[in-house]
Image (cartoon, rainbow, N blue to C red; front, top):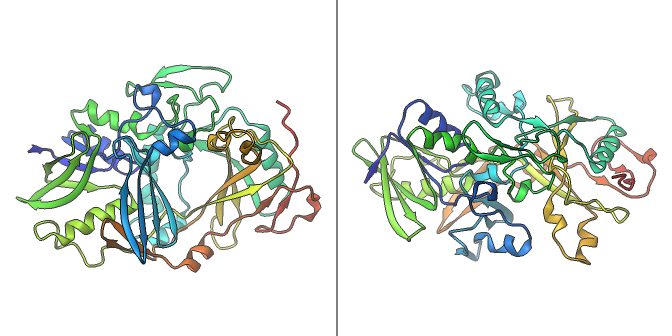
Length: 429
């Protein structure tokens, strides 16, 4: 059995910085990731571009209903997304070396101070500040150098509504000098990257390698410092062993059970799968039976919401632009701000063939980032989990700004949380 100083389960935005920092400090680190390496720019498996490829990249389907609880495997070796339907929630889980950093918009910002009201007293904004800066030094957030007519129009609409301000947004992309240039660089971790070409494909993976995701920085630091990143290795159980731990996993490359050991294990496999691994380990006699019975309580998630709005007057051109460019901050009398929201671009809406594209090209997508309250309970349910999270508490903690792009006059604007009535002009470029 291979032995390490630290085993990190999961290679996303939590596990990768921990693994990279530990390896840089001299620890012998092993990262276990159930997904594969992605990215055409890196010579790895290309991200999907089109609905057929997207369907083929569905790793599995988890269903947890009162009368049916089952996980259905589909494409375990080259699946990018895993889809769960749990107690009324639809949950998308990214799978790959780099975890969620592969398929997020890359928004980089410090959380407001009041978000720590839900955390233990020793975790404060002041204590976390240096850590956020350390991550920013690695992912190098920048503001996109070029706007688009679509985003400029949204900015104008928001300026007409009291209580909202549009703020230039930093994202973890390498933009170079702009989308009209096709620049190439080798980053400080030795990975080839091409500058962002405004393909709006951040949410399905960037094949040009412009995104500073965890696989092109922190995980490269692990390898450069003598560690190892094991892909297609799905962790199933953690056991106590001689004052340390044995981590058992299924090697999906040959479907063989294997294990590694270490005196320390970091479990960072996402909100659902971290719980799943710990539940199984707790229920096993020589696993982790001493885990607290509070496991699964005070469970929470990111507090994000997605909304769609249809406008019949415009062609929005979802195939061009950045996924996120500005964020709109909604003022609050109680907090630093109430919530952020974004007018998103996604190449997914540019994929449908004609005539379906007539509809998709008129859909505006909005992402709202608010605060979640850790008031949920997650519990094991066979191969899946159950989630109990009071819906009304979710609704009140995450208000949604509705934006209506009809022909009505802008004079009909009301206060925040009412609708903006604007008509988007035709693009000039």
